[in-house]
Length: 186
Image (tube, rainbow, N blue to C red; front, side, top):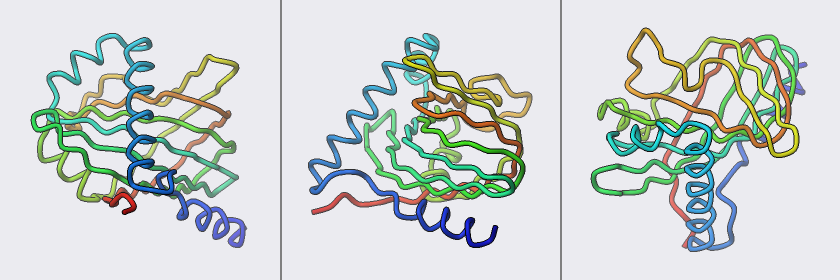
């Protein structure tokens, strides 16, 4: 089990923004952003107003794999400051402990209304979550569960949504998520 966990973690650590040049990488991220915002607007029309009123938002493209007791994920994305339109490119890695199985591709969106939380996320603060999630994608339809987009009694400084692209999974785990800034290739 430990060998499988290390192999999964090693594979997840290799995720980077696709593209041979910085220009290609920027196009990849811009396409991700546009597709995700369009899908989000279709599924949650209120999100456009939330983004317009936000201090910033983050869009990621993540691949997640979970075997019993251990899971890993990796991805890339962008944080956009709503006032300045400054773009910060990001890399994400995730490690889960807990029950579950599956593999999935998701596009999380975090819409921040707290400037300190937005800056902290971009600067690589750890986010530890405990919860249960389920997701499935069949054909062109996707669904994710586990509280994404649902109001919380505790103000976290952001609202999150998850667009599911492919795969199926069910988990109950403790997740440690690490985000760090990346520079595009020259």
